[in-house]
Length: 498
Image (cartoon, rainbow, N blue to C red; front, side):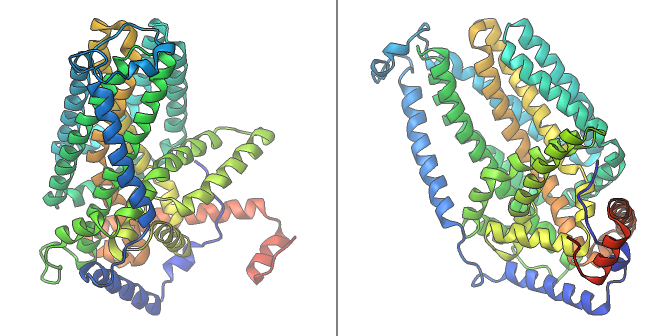
């Protein structure tokens, strides 16, 4: 995997002066004080908070209407008169399809709970399995779609399998470092049982909303509208579910990040300097003053992160095709620019300092670039591994519902299976996010003051520092290969060559 150009040097990072360390300690103290003091918190991104609440209320009403219209009685609310011109299918009832979504909710919950229960003892094996099995699973689902004569979905899953395989091949060099980071994140999470209880609680809240969501989705699948009309409605409902699920996942992200940051700052959760009721304060801030920022960031962050990973994998395998490489580099530059404003590390800043989302994202990215830690972050694939586990959980969930649907109504398999897959991804993602929160907090703390990681785990600190040194050397070598001697002299002197 290639990295974006950077002019940081390992010597600069290694030669952190005493004054710099004093500044980092002061920043740490300010972060502790900010999380512990209520008057410093202000509401941010209130507009997006209002939009999300209005969306929930409006979507709840729409879901209730769609589900009730075909609950026990066909066309109970006489909605079909508005769709009689596009009626192409036999009428059904909401309760015909609602149990199929109940299966999705149950399977997704069991997968999420099982993942959390096995977190301490089998997490490494589970992550390796999710990476290597996902490609095969996508290919198998693609074959099944072609067998059911669903050519669009067959092609879509085949492309997904190809991109997944390409990404795994391109990132094999980072595998050992990625697994190391994930193991340490799991170690941190396992030492904080209260954060796992937070994940369980939010999964229960998500299940309550999914009960309402699947009620409306079942009404859509049971309607007499043609496939195009039902698909458009399901797409709208799926976007709503994705946003709602992302908001809940990132709320957990903020809560866990605040706890992990405090533990690293204070050197343990049992020390006397640890603020009391830290978890409840993080929970209160996440659901009040910072909730608007969470709603805003949840709209874009996941899509931009996924696009970035795929472009990185594709970019590293292009070879010597200069025309294609130029186009991909331009797209990569655009995505990297967006990452500055929408990155997952913003949630740590939101948890600790209570900033707005864009402000937090910019500060986190500037912190990484100013310390050189951005080279380490770019080399790490832990987020991609967790996403793969989430997608695999969604595929298993969707498959379970699709098989039952195929037995009862073979013409509704793709509709029920795809939407059930989304439900499974959201539920499993709520379990995965606590590990990702630990990873992001570890990197933020390492950038703020590497001694925080040294105090927590000296061996891990040495491995991080060694990997960072290697990555910065690699980047410096690449810069020397690309730039001419005159350009290098100009950069050293602080001038620019046009």
